[in-house]
Amino acid sequence: MYKNLSMGALGHQVPFDQACALAQKNNFPGVDLDMGFLSRLAISKSSQDAKDWFGSTGLIAGSFGCSVAWRESDSDRAYADSLGRLVEEAKLAAELGCTRCVTWVMPCSDKYDFYQHFNLTVPRLRRVADILGMYGIMFGLEFVGPATKRADKKYDFVHTMDGMRAFVAAFGMESKNTGLLLDAYHWWTAHSSVADLECLNKDE
Image (cartoon, rainbow, N blue to C red; front, top):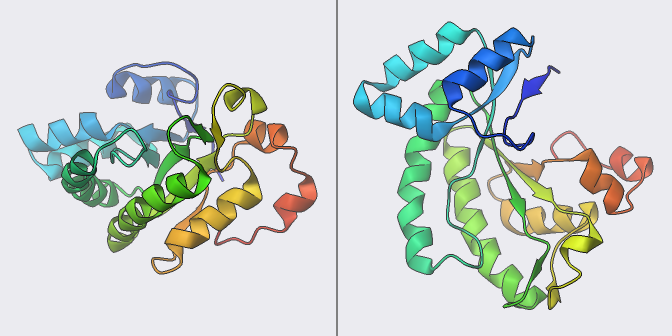
């Protein structure tokens, strides 16, 4: 286990080279990857140059965000077009020693009821998980717990730990590389307990 700097989780947006410098300055062994920055470096030079540049920071690759357009607001065309980018990012991430890709799931919708939302997102995320699995990358999904996030929406969706476990099982059984991105705040606001955590196994 190690401390990992995630600028996005802190609500800050800075260029990736600056994020790496901040991680070094403040004694964070790891940092979340900015695949846009690294992909541009790989395109303008080579994947080896991107690998050498990141290696020179001495940092551990924590995780990278899922760039696929898989959400309810994304069209089928946008989703399909974004899969190619995921393949390239997953390949580069694996070369950089990164074994985690993460995203979060919106806990509600004004457009789709629970079952419509489920039927839209499960096939999309199954394909994402399969692609990541080809490169030895785990896929972590975060549930969003606060009731305030759902209060003004028409339909609920997955927003608890057990709900997310079932959601993940629906599309991750074949690739066997899916699990929870567990945020303590969302765990608390979803009224989960320590006993719930103790029920998880290492594969989750």
